[in-house]
Image (cartoon, rainbow, N blue to C red; front, side):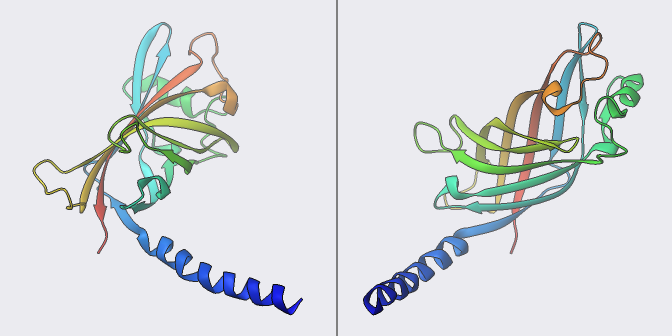
Length: 198
């Protein structure tokens, strides 16, 4: 019994520095308010439409040595969403679609980052996470590309640009209003500039 307890203690002491090292490798980044946009598109009566939804808050922690260990949580402000077609905004925020009154935010929390074939996030990487819309949480996978600022050195990671794209079926989240007018699928196109916090 003493031998087992001693082994557990030694194992715990060995694991502690490793946990601290992993935690220390995560660097916090902030979103640039001018270089970030969350766009979405949908089909209304057979015609492609688009809109934007502002980011309310973001917690972005990047492991520059192991990008697959990075973490992202983003909260979107549903009530402030806009569409290029003004009269489509009201129905979109209504109770039968996004129900902005009862669910004023949409949240995405990453659960897995898979790098591209060459081990980079700039070539075919994916980010899988839990998306919560109208209180319903489902997994979604987004295509991801992460780049350094043009003209910077390879080790200069102070400013990064990320592009995310993907699609979701709105009915899976209960946003099923106006099915005779609006198509099932909604496409996402997200561009963000990340600034390393000092």
